[in-house]
Image 1 (cartoon, rainbow, N blue to C red):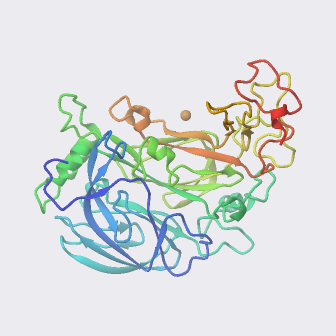
Image 2 (cartoon, rainbow, N blue to C red):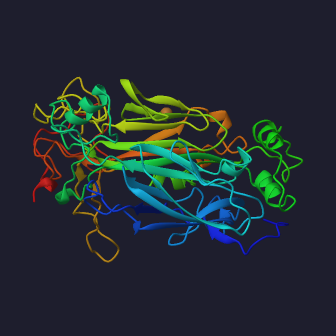
Image 3 (cartoon, helix red, strand yellow):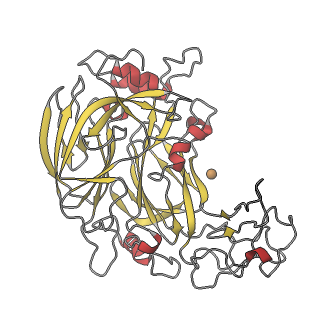
Length: 472
Ligand SMILES: [Cu+2]
């Protein structure tokens, strides 16, 4: 970012969201969270960084200036690290402000650092009082400091479920939420695993959960805030007005303040769609929680394919009547939990219906059904043993029809297209299915005709017995 004369910039943007687990008692953590580090004390520095925004390589070197919470043991990134702890735990935190104006760290209802002067370090502790999803952010000069990148997710897990019940994400779930979590893995309509249940044989972790922090970034405006008179706050009203309403003027590409990047947990487009930290990845019967925090100033209408999801909690209020939806509005500063049941996607052909385990798996092949009539989940198109390379060696053409990848995208599309025309660089992710834990785990279903190569063409039914290449 030309013109900014500040610290030696940290570089960030490699795309691996970092998590830190704090506290002593974590009965819910039966398996190490991927990439998580354990800490007894959080050591935060409030500093700045330049982040690669587009391709993460030299093809497109677009960068954006951010203010960030940097935990000492984790890489620089905006948003700040995911923090996980357990209800009732005491969190010790040290925060140093390396920037030129006062900053803070605030968790509504739980913690308020108060203003930390430039160069000052504070030492505090607080109790994680409420299980659920919380945003931590800088509440000074609101909303400038928060939108400049000073925000993150603070997740408090309950200590234990109510006697005779299964874990939910809350210490006082409503009857409807408790019923849903009790039914997962038990009721015939939710076959598979409970949320709290893992399975080492499929490498499925318990408490499957994802965090989506929604944000928008304006490289021009953030750069101007970074260059503003040291020690003075950038005028908040001007920041908001320009961030939301600056008319796009192609003649002034270096001053326009409209956001150019719409991100989920710091990533956009291909990088939010393919990140294992963002895009849920599981089998039918492995329900997953998504905690969604909108740290920005724009509204996002998040629309999921393949499954409807349950809205469990909104801004700390556990819901009495669970909405079952495929689209929901996420306004600025809302914190909303979704439960994706990971039921069988309705478009995957199977006569036994959606997600049911009480009937055998049957192919839809035969007259009157759609073509191709194949079961997709878990299916392997076997290799064509007749294919040879130039040296006469067999070529493996085997294709596993997993994962089945479905999109999650923002229906506020005109506002999310990075200056009109780059849809795939916007706020998108997905939902991946890598199989069905309610059907035989092996590939090549014996009652299933397997389409091979180009297939016989539309309207031609496949043989009822496996073709010769199917034999093992
Ligand atoms: Cu869609």
